[in-house]
Image (cartoon, rainbow, N blue to C red; front, side, top):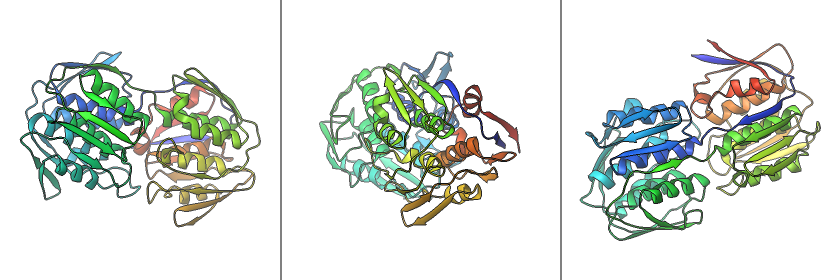
Length: 418
């Protein structure tokens, strides 16, 4: 097991290229199960979660060819419809295999998924929607067993916007008989990227990016070529790093339009932000003002950037309130930030952060993916000998070579064996 070691206090400057979005790549890889032939996917990030879903799909008979510039995927010889617990337990997104397996083969056996400890994130939204499409299901020793002759279109209303639920049903519906309408659907950019991939395969989808999505089932699909969108959460993490260290960072190969809420909050905090084309220039002002945030589904402030923004507020002038409305249990990182001297009080789903002049280096432990990033950011500005971030396997699930990218920007940071 590895840890990341940081000597804080360096001002970060330079440019950094953002990797492909993990949360777009996972459903797109799952969608490759819908039809045979060689799919060609560009900008797939090299992450633990990607390796996990590839391992699961390989167990089902899927073949991968990694040519460097693109990952090729072929499911011609799919020979199993069961995703086993020993692989699924590490990643909640594995539930995304349920929809395409039912669409193509009419049966699936998927272990109930695991992943970060940031809340229940139940799969009942997926199962309720699939039942409306004619699927017979039962639970047996932690597995979802599902069967259907052919999926049928349905009008589906999600109780709350669910990203993976919207994605799973979109994938399932593209070859269903009739029309499927998803209401109160998620609107995240990753949803739109999946829709683009499915349209490249021949699917008939409209309305992605709005809260109502229309999918008219088609009989035949073909393999596609597709480029994964940049990771907006990675881009946002580097933007916050620039604000925290008072440096000047150019974030390249990103989509500024996907980061509108963060851009406005950083400007309110006194950071200079300039978006041009596919890049964002962030200049820290040296004085950080406190700003309140409330996480919301896209296009609101992303819950996946809440922990990182909290690290910024820990060294801001004044008090800020951070309200988490998307996931319960997403303040687990607070106790670790307090080990570094942060002044934070929790009241239900709100955190009151009193900014301080400095944070102090300390050994800390990552509890989930985004919490890991917040601790790295705190370490970049901490005073003292060294900050050690332990259990960084969480970080490796969603950030590609994060310590290497920070080192190129001028940070004193490296990876060590525990």
